[in-house]
Amino acid sequence: MDRGVLSHAWRRAAVAALLVTSLNCAIAWAQSSDAPNRSSLEQTAQETALQPEVELQTGITLSRIGRFSEAIPHFLAARGHVSDDYAAEFNLALCYVGVGEFPKAISVLAELRNGNHENASVENLLSQAYEGNHQPKEAFQAFQKAAALTPHDEKLYLFVEAAFMEKQDYAQALRVVEAGIRNLPGSARLHYELGYGLWQLEEPGMAKPEFERAAALAPHSTIGYLAAAQESFMLGNLSEAAKIARAGILEGFADYQLLCLLGDALIRNGASPGTPEFTEAKQSLEKSVAARPNFASSQIALGRILLQEDRVDAAIEHLELGHRLAPQNPTPCLHLATAYRKRGQLEQAQAMLAIVDRLNQDQARKRRRGLDENR
Image (cartoon, rainbow, N blue to C red):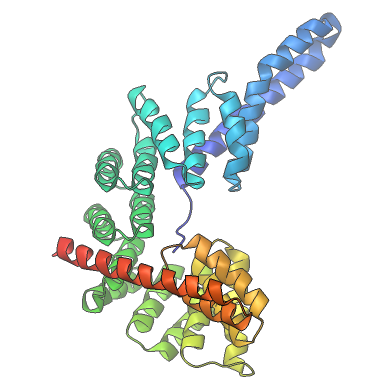
């Protein structure tokens, strides 16, 4: 599941953007006040000196809205030429993580760490970069440094846990969340994540009390409803899961995850085209996709519904996006195999089935390893 963005990075970016904007305003005021006394050569020199700051501001603006690939050239142009070089370097590393260029991110962050910028934000992002680069040992060590610096930062645990979960490194993900709960025992979100991780390890008996704890800690909230609905979903009580999710949405917590869970529960519970439940499921999933287009689960579930309606081309569009967003998940590949067969693309269908077989084997191996390491 897509778990959000790096709020520390966004906060740093927002501060840097504000500083650059203030700087530009100050310079603009200075230019207007003494313009008659300055030659065009002086003005050109000042504009040239200002250009790296403009590049930094442009990069920050793009990165804040998730356009990481476009932001990277601007940060590269600003490197070494701006007043706040840390902002340029850190946000460049953030963008490299965002586009999956983990070795480049590691290189930038290692330089920051060695240059008197060894702080929790750097270690947090470095942990995620290491995990993305298949270096779990280094990732966990960086996480431990970040946690030692900011032990009560809930988002630290959530971001690093999400990076481990994305790679299906369940044992390390659970270690991160358990460390967070030791420091933040009252965090409903961390108890929810622990329950979800245990569910992925096929340990529903251990996951159940964590979901219940999360719901008890944050009743009448998004996470409270999500935890209660996930517990029912996990236990196979799909009608109850849909009922809880619907109640949360009606109470005003129309979170993209809750909308997705409602739609998925209704479909798995037998909703078929032409029924009110099917219509409700489709509308919920469409709202979820609109709210968070990069949430793989919503794209996959919506693709499945469209396939049931025989809207094959539209289904393939959502399923292919779901596969790109969650390449380790076999579910979109399985539905894509069906969709490709319906469109007469038999070779593509067979290729998807081969991917399903490989991913299922990989998941089984990772779950066994996770169970062994968690005992």
